[in-house]
Every structure is written in structure tokens, then in C-alpha cells.
Picture 1 (cartoon, rainbow, N blue to C red):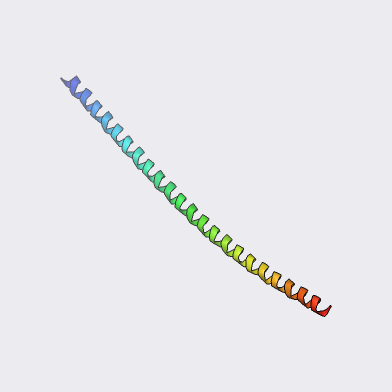
Picture 2 (cartoon, one colour):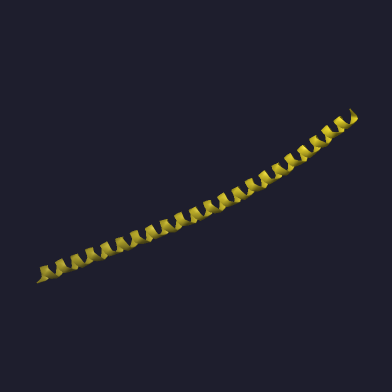
Length: 83
């Protein structure tokens, strides 16, 4: 009987340990997932900001090009008129 009790106790302890381990693993996994999600969100935000910046730059470049073209056209017109 004593032997049986001891065995039962050991088994219970083992089970408890296993459960604890499983819980810990689950918690770790959850934490990792959360971290990954956060990282992904941050990356997405960064990408969006970068895209916005690029768009702004492109717009500025387009405006500059238009201005340059206008200047060139006026210059050409002026040259033609003087001739």
C-alpha cells in the first residue's frame, strides 16, 4: 500500500510538472507571437511613412520639372522673338 501511495505521489508530481511546463511553453509562445505582431505592425507603419515620403518627393520633383520646362519654354520663345 505504501509503495502504491508513493507511486501515485510521484506520478502526480510528474503530471504537475508536465502541466507547468506546458503552461510555460504556451505563455512563451504567446509572448513571442505578440512580439512578432508588434514588430510587423511597426514595419508596416515604417513602410507607409516611407511611401508617403517618396510620394511627396516625387510630387516635388514633378513640380520642379514643370517649373523648369516653363522656364525653358519662355526662354525659347524669347530667343525666337528676338530673332
